[in-house]
Image (cartoon, rainbow, N blue to C red; front, side, top):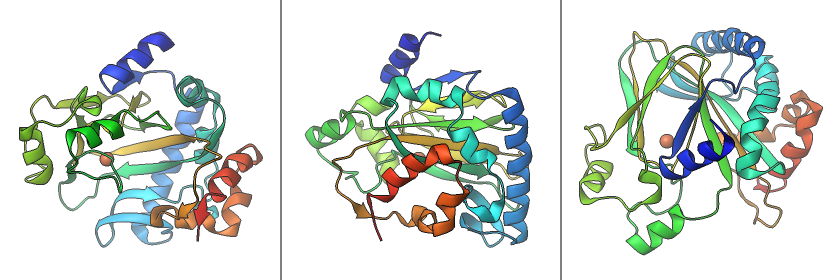
Amino acid sequence: MSTNEQQELYKTQGYFIVDDAVEPEMFDSLLAAARRVKQKVRSGEVDVYTHWTDPGEPWAIRGLFAPEFEEPVFAEYLMSDPVMGYVEPFIGSELQLGSVMIFTNPYHKDSGIGWHRDFGKLPRDASPEVELEILNRPMTRLKWHLPLVDDSCLLLVPGSHCRYRTDEEQAILRGDRESEMPGQKVIELKAGQTCFWHGYTMHRGIYKKDVERLTLAGNWSKYQPDAEPEEVDPRHRWQLAGDVRDALPEDLHVAYDRWRALQVD
Ligand SMILES: [Fe+2]
């Protein structure tokens, strides 16, 4: 698939899947590190910023760059050549720090996240004019999933990132967010494949307690020197700790400093 084809798929479908966004040796290191991290979090040994389904049952693990985990491979992966080779054609090489986190299956019960767009604080019930303006803003972020074991937990509606929602979709987004969505597609990924996808697509996650999920979710953001500093996202507050910057590879310090300069503590 050429870069042009990837960009076209991303633009029209909201995602594309590739086989070569991680070096095989790096993949092995990431898998081993992710297993250690999950074990440390589940045992209560380390908890930098974890999303729990219930006490002791994590479904998302943040804080991977923190020195407490002693796993520099996650930061090395973020800035690795295969990742950058995909990121730069989309958002350029002037970047501010992105992140890597782990999505994983809790063991005690099936769980999931209902249908949504990754709108953060943006309005979710806006008029067509407002919502289309949001959907058409210039791209400032690229995100992806790298499953370390086979993963079919992500469902999305292809093409939904560039159009207004239908009444039926809105009823699901605002009602039973776990019901079947018209046009939904299960994103089947083999370990080591990478799916780059648009967070404005309508999407959901389904976790099975007996099916191992160990998927890295990564992203990079475009450097926006003119952006107004904002209150730090509570999910990223741990990155303000003085020892996080020191734990990063030196090549990431510029990207870290750009991120830090925009955080109001
Ligand atoms: Fe999401």
